[in-house]
Image (cartoon, rainbow, N blue to C red; front, side, top):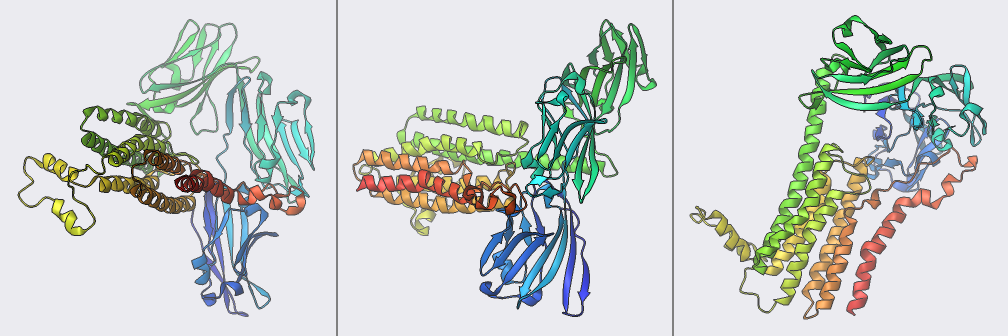
Length: 623
């Protein structure tokens, strides 16, 4: 979140302290809290409190008469703590930060008709690092990234321009678009992204003649200024290869023309010359002289080291056309080399390693808990059915294990935003066991042997082992202890453990892309309420069923359907940010119900079709 540097300006006339703060290095799309505290305004009734946050001439959010009003640009992205408002803490939280969020924010209190500024915060949102050199195969799509605060005139951007050298590729001026005929139908900019400060150029189809330096221009505060310079290289052939340290790399080279081999190191901004080939004569710089060999039409680079990680490209010297590009990654003992610049490089490597190891441990631990509980359910089915064939239910664990491996290897332990495969596969592995136990219990209610209920602490202690009983037959004693518990208590316990583990598992699993901690907290609270409703439904309805197998199937079907709420995270859908700064721009952003209330709509739809609706159908069917 960067350093927060505070300095205080004393205003003697009114006896207030105005806090100036700086929030720097905020990553694009992350969350940030802008501080604003005032101990003189504690315990004010909510209907008497009027707090506003502004940036420039745009209102961010306002708390007045107990209601929160959000500015068009910040709908569903700002948060004021109710407890903080009671205690004089008016700090503002902004989620899913955009590049245009950068600027100075003012915290204003309206008291007795007068506006008093309590604090100001300078917010700086960092954008992803733009590559100074891009390589792309001919015919492929590529995006040239550029970010900036563009002047607007009404609902249109004032001026945006992309040039290649001195040639105007694209120009957007007050809603009028010009595209050079050479690039017609192949390049575009997105008005929706421009509103968010993203003025990147989208190349839908690249050609060999598109090589060159591209410069992004835009108008800000009335001045036209350059922003980003990108060297775009179009190649006939491009490949990505991995090699271990000490191995060799083979580069195909044409022999009919004079070519050069150049190299761009990982993280570098400048290319270096490697070799020059004139038909059969090879000349290389000193660093590569003893490591290169020409065989037929192949240039061999031997004894690769971590310094060779980067991009090698072969270019015709006369036409400057790029013939071949190879992106090389060097691995040492099977581990990819990650380089960190600066004096804290070793600390960076350690931090990344610890974070990745932590994600792997947490993900593996969550998956292990899922498998353990499912295994207990299968063991219980095998015990009550007295048939070892039911151990085949463990085959249902395979999707969960495969998903855990994929998550660890490809997604680096991260979950998805809208959907959790681990939870879905956990439900698939345990729900059949609960169905079998419930059906078996309903069929054998009257014939169940004497058992021990767990409705009091004395009954629980009666099945626990005493001193001297835990010898070599520990497992047998544990099995006898568990099998003595009443079937209804067993099933109820599985239901409770299942719901608790769903909540605990979601909390332990690493966050999905785009899910904030606030959204996760909201999701877990929803999970708790949903779990309580489902547990009440199953425990009360199944206990009242007598000799009605059809009703049992209906109840279990409704219960199974309601469990689908847990893997789908529709409740954390965040409304799409607005595409303009003012309602007068004609986009109607503040009047779109779907844009303002998408979270509430998704919650209602999910509750109606997955929980409340099926529960209502069951009640109607039962009567």
